[in-house]
Image (cartoon, rainbow, N blue to C red; front, side, top):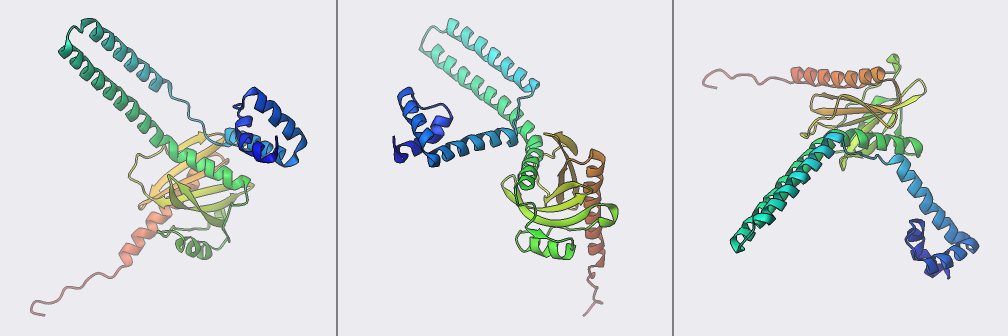
Length: 276
């Protein structure tokens, strides 16, 4: 086996999907070809990294019970319909009822999954983005402790202007910012340091979807969320929950106060005297 024959089989071989004879030939080729062996090892490393970093969502016990109950009820109904079927019209009725049962089952399961994932996805995505940025070299795209440098950089690259505040006097030092994605949409990320901890604060316009819990823990990271003046704030770090919640609530509260102050400073229209 040469490299041209081996390359298309490397990924399948790593997953144990190559049959015996070709697997034997490929194994001999990998033992003598450093280039193909490196490709095979890269596939194994990627698989291990995905298993370690990509969040896994086990089905809640309540959801499993609902699905089993619905399936049991559907099976019992289908069996009763089969026993009572006697003519063509009865068969048609059975088919219609079976279709209704399947539709109801799909709706029950789909609604439960959507409701559950709506509260899970935001936090899980934020944790995954935080881990990816921390492990890589993409923690900041604009490195600066000056909020007047970070804000214009982010505003020029997003379709909204994220509030940026440096709270170094309170122990939260702004180190820069970057663009990232939540729910497939670009968001601003403010990067802070608190002692030896890195804190990512994701900022985006407030979404209409169901809100995630204000505080939770995923894979050893704490996730805190707050909303202020039409903005969502989601902070991720391994600092203690009270510290993280205090930061994100402070940022949301300050932004709301700034918005109120700007509204008061807007010039009010003057009324003209009658006849003018």
